[in-house]
Length: 231
Ligand code: 6PG
Image 1 (cartoon, rainbow, N blue to C red):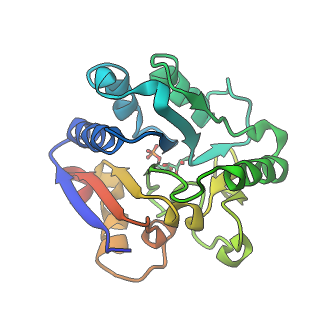
Image 2 (image 1 turned 90 degrees about the horizontal axis):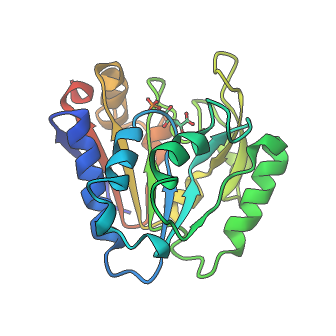
């Protein structure tokens, strides 16, 4: 697993375009293409580009869609990562199969179901072709928050998570670091000056103390950041 690569783009739109180009290139010519979508607000610009300007560059029926994490709310809830992706992308392209995390069933039940699904996939290596990720200002990614029990994820590809008392939705389901490690490429999308201090901690302090700094994909871990986040 190579060291992460950081690519600085001028603006959030530049980050979204670069991510779209990377996804198109990775999807081209592959018999199947499994992508895990990121939650939060940053990826919306990317999803909109994939549904419009880049739409015809992807063979959507061969694309299998998964999610990096989900909040334990119904799929039509404003906090649902599925809802964000459905509105900006999935309702606008003919994706082959969409695997929604049924997080409304509760974190433990939904995590067990998702873990079983991921373990049933064949071929199981790589698990995903691309995992899209964001990063919170506290250094979380997916729904892996600072201080999470990494040992408790042993042998798991998906797990229940707790976003903490300040989160809008505390109960979560998340991919584990092992799930990303078994995937070809991880692409972080990070924009905005509020992420700059954390980005420095992740990439300059060197210590793998923050969840985002622990992420390594099998072949490539790419950080697409805008100038404001780079600081
Ligand atoms: C979630 C996301 C989370 C997100 C970061 C960044 O469900 O909240 O998976 O990891 O990527 O919180 O969110 P923004 O892109 O909104 O800053």
